[in-house]
Image (cartoon, rainbow, N blue to C red; front, side):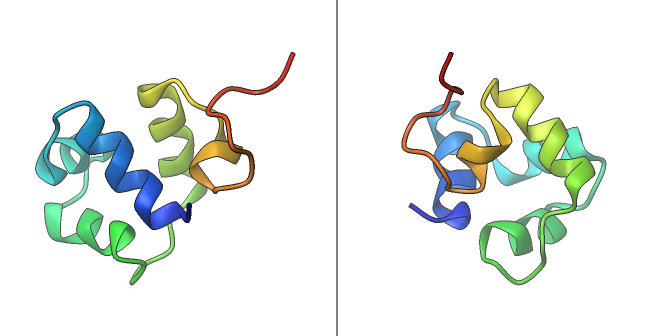
Length: 72
């Protein structure tokens, strides 16, 4: 699964709108929408906030492992 699908899936799994996530990141909804559509790159500062908010690893959001939590 790619980053674009992961961002949308994480948001939808929590029943949240793009506007709600955009507010969390202190950006406009249309700007966040561009992250989900792959038009704008996701800045590291936003990646960190989303990892903390969703309680997943950066690797998971970036589509690197199959599991959302790092292996222990």
